[in-house]
Length: 296
Image (cartoon, rainbow, N blue to C red; front, side, top):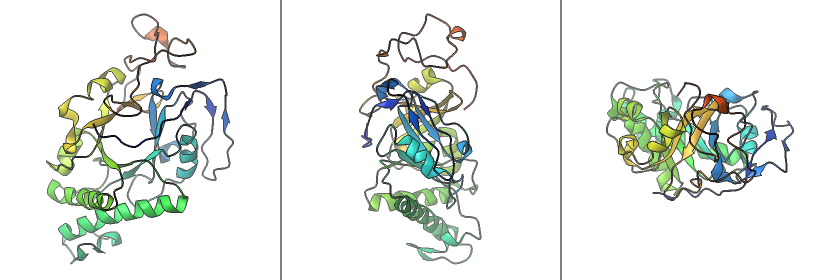
């Protein structure tokens, strides 16, 4: 299991923070609401959560989207969300959106592959992927932050060609940009979408896999090779709960994997959960229970 270099701090169990692009909203943290990070889930948020309430805790860790859904765009409230995430970590991880360059994408024209001829999608793909990496580092540098980890978000919702060999060339360009600079990174997606987009491409990096239905199923995917797409090991599994994309940290070396543990405050489960709707006895731990609502 790869060690991702995250720094784990106490998690905020209750906080009040409203998103705002200007970053001027107040942050209020209840001093008596601190619990160990390993006992609670992680979340990922981005531009869809702008001007909305963030997860109300407890929060073990957070991964913040840098872009506005596509490469070379901006999440307008990124810095505000990142400062929220810093309530529980000094250097939260981020994720960046990946896609194939459309015909008029200027970022694909020149780069390590040289100046590409019109219609040379192999050349354009690599230059574009490399430029995604460069744009990412330039953006975080302007913000004055150094994320602990970078996730490449590879999803079918963005623009891709029908030929996965060419799509994988984009990803290769970004992968090699980060490897040249020894920047820690991994790949987010699902096995199904990865096969459609990138085919059999393998990069041997940590994997963050999505689509689990509840935390019990999320836990089961950590050691399941069927979800280790892109030739890496699964270290995070995304599921849906609390009204947000929620994440389970797999055991085996991941700093956030001390889960489940007894709640030091003696509570019987995560706040806000409808315990009456869950089968079985009251929860004595922050433990896996089936998701109460559908969604990916």
